[in-house]
Length: 289
Length: 246
Image 1 (cartoon, rainbow over the protein chains, first blue to last red):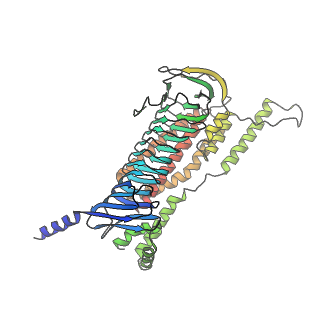
Image 2: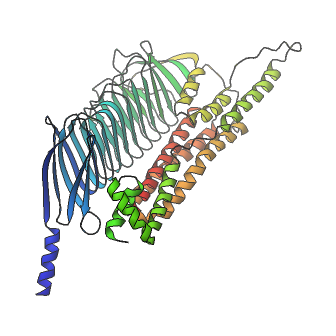
Image 3: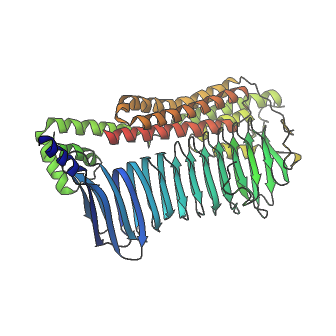
């Protein structure tokens, strides 16, 4: 009897509970969520309302705190720390979001405001975003698609993948690859320690592009009509090109400079032991160096 | 110390509580020694973790480098082009590659792209090489310039050492903080952080050895600087994780 009662209490605590509430918000307000574990999914719609859906245990509550400029969601447990919450939030398209978690996957789709998403163990996947887009994961992949603005994307052990993005980009990983495709930017700084770097995008007039890896390869697309000065440094790697490339100057030992067209854009490529590859736009799409 | 307040202490230190909650917690802190001690410790850890963000490199590095450039330039100019008459010597702003290396390292403390800027200044017109896939570039690219350098240039070594020392203090403090708080981190996260710190250390070591063998490879200083900065950032992130788990 006692055992049955205890089992019933445990099951009751473990029973998932759903939160589902919708309320009016300022369309340019900012959403803030901190989530210890679970998932945060944020989607956008064309209404000045926010819908908060959450799956969590019975002893956990989702607390909404609102001011005119900020909507803050927190999970609170009746006893002990709040555990796993799976959030699914729908926000006005122009809203900004600041999301952070520990054991948390983060997905954002269709938001046009600023986005900050940080997690420790989990992936960050964002489609959209404008203004400042700041993404970080220690143990997960960082993926960004279709953003416009200033992008700062960092991973530690996994890849950073950025596609069809326009604006200033900083992208780094320690041991993962950095893949940049369909980029329209005049300022790109991409780096990895042991991962490779692919850049397939514009080389704009007067633009500044830096690609630095220690032991990974660097592959760069050079459009046929580009005007760029390509400064390449590698200690133990090879330099290959899928098209004719003329070395016009040498900056120093093992640091040749290739000038394409007028040489207006400045491209710096450095790798200690990786290879450097040049290709035409689209030739290596979705393929690693 | 109740569960409710334990959970809110970190938010309190981060200034995330609203006025009502903050007031209630502050009343509680006056009567709960355990919570008050925990708040003090949290503030200390957060202070450590955040303290490095605005910590600039020591400015006197550049002064020392600039002084060295002036002294060496003076002695080299005198030995190569001794003045014909007293007071006739014309001051020239010419930098050798090792000097630019040292200047670049010092500047790299302030900007990761500074070395590249310095390098462009030493570019010399030379041969034209055509590269066509799948042909490789030759192992040794012929250059139109020579380098008057000593592979064990003590000045270069000293500047590299100084660069490492600039980061060493901050890195050592953060490593110490991580060691003290590592039991607060998930073991998988700790393992990933340690593996990636090792990856960065190996990269720094390889580039440092290569630079000491070949001080003319100026861009290696940028690789070292970039990777030391990455190590500092990873340690800072790890320290912030420790603080958030406390």
